Image (cartoon, rainbow, N blue to C red):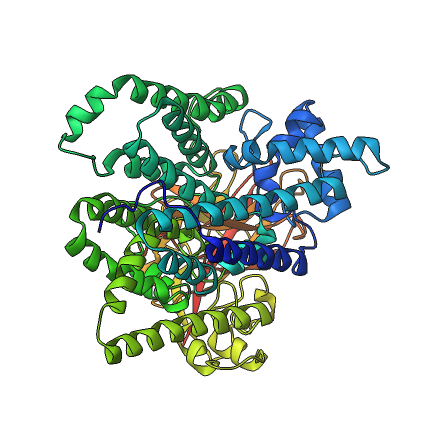
Length: 611
């Protein structure tokens, strides 16, 4: 099948359907209007705007401003959206593409706030409505271009069906209208991809300078929004060449336009480079602030991303499994088009799967793959045509299968909204135990879900019916190099911490040797003898994990309240993190920071693993 042509227009039924979809999306957004649009991750994407145009003082003044905003608008529980710098100040965690795209709406909200009684602080109601409206605007633009792409390949009926399937048969509608304040990056990126594909089609058919300039701008903004979206360049780079020219000849003929495309792309990207340079002194600043969160190209979680009951794309968005099968039909019918789309699909899936937090926090299905559904409509459309050309019985069976997938998606969306399906703790056992239910079951949640890491104080890890205990480490320092005589018991030894020896010998163990479960509680006990008080810099008992030498999930208990002049027992309870790899190591040790020496004895480390 060939591209239908750029001249194919929307007929009246198609236009009516598009308008109805627009109205439904607007209604859904308004009906599920968020309590605070500019909150959590969106708060982080947005910070570039108020910190540049409203609070542009020193880092200290900006932090005071943010404290005031958070206390006033309850924007976030912790300020995880920024990263402190060693030399002072801070850097914003997320890149600036979202802020650039929403800037016009921010300025409109700022203008309205200044001419009304609302605080012109960047976060009051006018700004909230402005960002909310901007999100609806970008959603509608994305749906419009999604339909235009479909019409470039398929007849109107198939095109409308494809758009309806994407909106109602996937996690698109839920995340773009009902959850995540409708202003998360996947909304913006989905629209960006629809425009990129459309401009790519248009440029290869009619290679005009204006078209490729727009293409460079949109590609730049998409990459500026999420740097891993550099994979979007595979679409215009590998798109089928029209006519008999080969790729080298075609690109050589359009070299001037390609240079201009590259200049625009670099110019947009330089926005982030300039920010990093001015803030950190470095042109590239790729530290995400947490070693446990980032790309790990050697350990992709592709099976989990696609098939797991926690967040499997094919489990919670089964229509995309059919769309993926559509690549087989696309390969048979149009190999030239198959190549760029399938290479993009595989590369993008690899990047999404390589993110260590592959479940992408609290979300429904795989929200990171929502933008790629702009590409998936092509193999999906080819599959639908293949089905419609079959005999009646085969057509009926496949139609029922697709309908069942859409119904399952809608039902699971309702389950998620009602709290039956949790955002990030789902398990296979809980999935089947609650399949078909619309009523949350707290007892099943407590029994079958992954541990609630936000409420670990409610977990009785000493319950032997649920947890098994194992001794990992016990050091009495009787044979430890550097051990000294016990300060008050003859014949015993202890370890002396002083200004010359600030750490006890570390205990290290890999996660794979600690437990084979998804988590374990670590109970650390020790006896300490303080020889004096120093409340300003108390000694700490610490526990942490490290990934390739970088520390994360660091916790401690201070010895500040421990009385001096006698032996006391202390205890630290530590819940293992969701490790990046099974080779990540737990480290337990004391860190001496005070003037007076401290004696340490009987360090015992125990693991409590769920049965």
